[in-house]
Length: 207
Image 1 (spheres, rainbow, N blue to C red):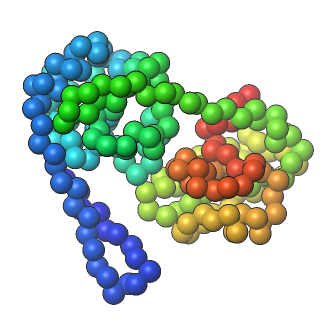
Image 2 (cartoon, rainbow, N blue to C red):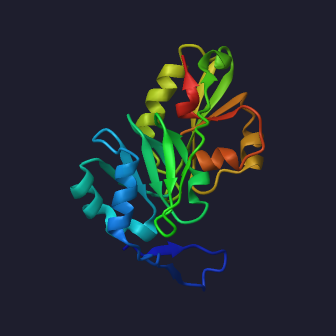
């Protein structure tokens, strides 16, 4: 189990977050997953309280078993079952044929409504575009991906620049840059936290 350092404005604080495992009946969880018809192309996503089930489920089911990280954007070819206790699944962005939440504590199963967002790339034609990269820990910064996206968008946009943030991406900072569109390569939660038009995730763009 990982220890997570929490950063506060008061640097004199030194706090570590230790996710506590929630012990459950793993055989009962396995039976529920089998009832959902899990196959090899399907996936089970574990939140940190249930990571100790990873090897067991992979061995017994032979499917994809994932552990949720800071940026919860999931894409699988088949169905997805999220093992979580509480409202974690509401912060997911999921691409799958079908998706379910299985609470390992109560063994309750409920469907997750998939709301996949798409933005026509044609909307960026002739516009000034910023491809935004965030270097903050947990944002999976990928400059090579940003450069590929810049090259692709340059075919239709008036101008495409890569803008790098060392810390949080804020509305004020984006407004001050003055671009027409902002394409973020970081966690989708960042976009959800911004109340600005024309701010999109890179993977929402479609031809």
